Image: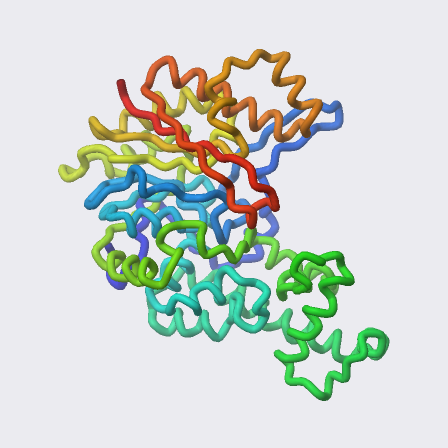
Length: 410
């Protein structure tokens, strides 16, 4: 790894000196939408999309990552990298079409290196703790230790400057509003700033329909109040704060967390901005494939990418860009969210898919169809195994099934 365990870039990476320029380009390109004629249209992730602070599916890397493995994984929130390190991977190639994803992933890796178990979660994953979640003071501790790359610091220096500004503006807006405080029966003078904001997060929660938690994070309050339209954009860049310590093995207890902290010192993490449609070509251009030490990836983890790509396109990308990168015994793993193993193994006609769309929503139907088509095409050429898991209820409020697909050369 580079000095101080930073992520090494394999291709040119933009120095983000003006973050607002990127904010103007941010939108949730991961969504699948219906156009005005009712036709389904898909839009892939772009080079400046919303950044994921936490993963959106369970990670079962323990079933295929072994000691000293060389793996490739979608970077996303960085959890897949940390999980693979816990299970023994030594060389990790992280890739993502969204170059901005490097920021939250780097922050997460640095936080793991420098915070204890409980502080790690209160800083990154538990937005209900309003004075600790994405706390600027905790961030400054990370920055002072110089574990973050200068480009990453550039971004978060701006982010936390805006965060502190938002916090103070919202405090002033609420504490000086006699009507709100009178209705809620609060005397701002009796509380410190943090105590008052915590109290207001509890009080505002039920008013805005957040009955399940009765709490609002600062970012949620920002979105609701949205003074002069200036607060929401900076917080909307970060997506998905779940507060679930069981999402991966490396976080399930303090011992696992500390083992990951120890192992990361001996790991090599490299990042390349690309997508699965051109991963092999990008690695060839960067010189990565020319290293005499590279013998092929022992595993390539794709998260739930096939849901967002036409099934035929995904199957073609796997064959042309990914399988050639595998070692002889290597495997490719991807997740089909909300899809049972039985569904994947069944042969469904287009009529069945259309029927499914009537009893669900069209967006889910196209994601479901993408998974089925990809699975059917890949099964003809490769050996496929599946593993069905229960989805954490924290992710979507439902106990449904996810299926992980393991692909190997015949």
